[in-house]
Amino acid sequence: MDWLVVVVQWLHVLLGILWFGNALALAVIVIPAMNRLPIVRQREIGGAIGLRSNRIFPVVVPLIILLGIARGTVLGPIKSLDILFGTAYGLTWLAALVVTTLTFIWGLRVIVPAVEAMERAPVNAHGTPTAALIAATDRAKRLVLVELIGFLGIYTCMILMRFGL
Image (cartoon, rainbow, N blue to C red; front, top):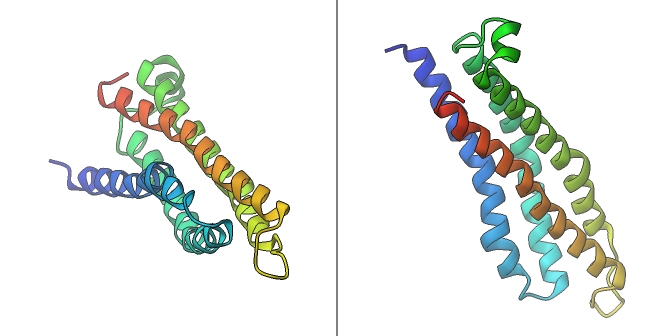
């Protein structure tokens, strides 16, 4: 058994579970639960989650990508451009790399600014939400849900690669 391959695979999967699991938990548990709360409270909770996520995932996701590159190439079957572009596995691996990178960029360039806009949106003088805050909060929640499309693509590629496709 090649222990380096095991360690790289283990870390790649663990970090992927953290990232994908976070998105699933937000979509299935956190956002639906928050929808029952007042908008101002939703912003408070969403902002705290966003702040924590912005410290973790800019480190975790590049590691996932680098470990995936190592696992597919140096420690895996992709040793040439012929294998990358000429095999089902190579094409699926490339698709996974592209979709993972695009999903990460979506988070950085779309979701993070949406959460920041939600944080900046004002409340009324008596602490009730403004129309701008309601719209910004709803937008941030929708964008997090849209991110799941990328994760479903990544997950599908991982399953296909497990079976050599």
